[in-house]
Amino acid sequence: MSDDRGRSGPSRRHFLGAAALMAGGLGLASNASGRSIRPRAAWRRPLPPKPGEATRIAIVGTGGMGRAHLSAILDLNAEQDLGVEIAALCDVNDLHAEDALDRVKKAGQKSAPMMTRFSEEVMADESIHCVLIASPEHWHAAIAMQAIAAGKDVYIEKPMTLKLDEAIALRETVRRNPEVMFNVGTQKIMLPKYQEAKKVVESGRIGVPTFSQTSYCRNSPEGEWNYYELDEAWSPGENLDWDRWLGDFGPRAWDPKVYIRWRRYRDFSTGILGDLLVHEITPLMMSLESVGWPVRVQAIGSHLVDTEMENHDQVNLQIEFESGHQMIVAGSTCNEVGLENLIRGHEGNIYLNSRHCEVRPTQPYVDFEDPERIECPDIGNDQNVMRLDWLSSIRTRKAPFSSVDLGTKVMVVVDLATRSIWDGHAYRFDPETMTTRRV
Image 1 (cartoon, rainbow, N blue to C red):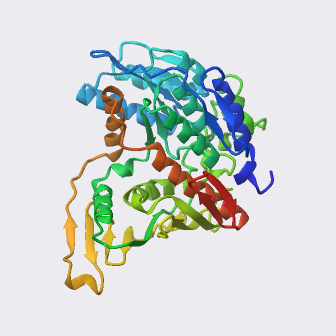
Image 2 (image 1 turned 60 degrees about the vertical axis):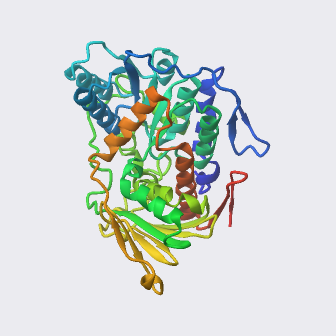
């Protein structure tokens, strides 16, 4: 594989092939440049639950994150009587799906969910209202677009997609089908401090927002994501469909490390960027919505300690937005000390290191503005708050808080930073044409 994978490698071919699964369900075409796929029409409109009817959810991807979502939803349903029913469990690994089924049974659900390896079977079931997608990243876009074509509401795990062209196509699909309740699983945007910071920025209280910073740093001496254990019971061809898991990234020899630790490998994940930094970049970018889209990204990465990992264990990013605002981001799995979580303006700064939002004027404006600590409530498990927001949207038809536009803006940063790390160039993004170019 050549070093231009970020621009036109297997993920692009994979997306084109996977999107073809929706033939008859959603019209797709390439634009004149061949850079994107644009949906023409929806196949089926969403059918939300009727009053008194259970919300029937399918979990697509029952690995670690998928089962975590499943258990949380079952617990919330028991605590709050949400009227939720697990309608389907979909995974290429029968052992993972069977473990998920055990959890459903232990929760006391009387009806048995559909068990399948094929997402197409989930989408064909018109009794299923919504789909929670927790597959590996290289399947996110295709499965989400299948679901939208089938008229199902969608919760998609972060990062929204693996590559930017997938994100742009998915955004267009969602925008053309606004009746679909679409949520990107970046739960920190639910924290009140970021919502308060957004109000402060847009009020003009810190003046022009000039510069921001954030990070996700931790130390994993045994190698990040190596904590996902290998299972000798996995048997491709018997209880696991390895070829389907690979999609157009195959064929290749069975490798249990790639299968369960895919975040470590360049073909299947952007590593720190998409899996960790998205947690911190997303809420900060939400607070800074007024500065526009990211338009220039450059990044560097290193292999310092975890030299066996194909993706990098240390990264640093520089991002420029439409307004000229600049953001720096650090990510590490070999040192736990990160950057202060901070938004700077020419008249004051916003500190976001605690649960609260702290606004402090800077010189020479300290004589005209008092510092303020905006007390923010403890909302508990922010991921549960997001899950509940999505489940509520399915019944109320009020759009969930986490939008496809924000998810796409974050993917501009993730994708262009990944390209920059691997080829050493900076990249520009044009939000008018949704195209990129190497600088």
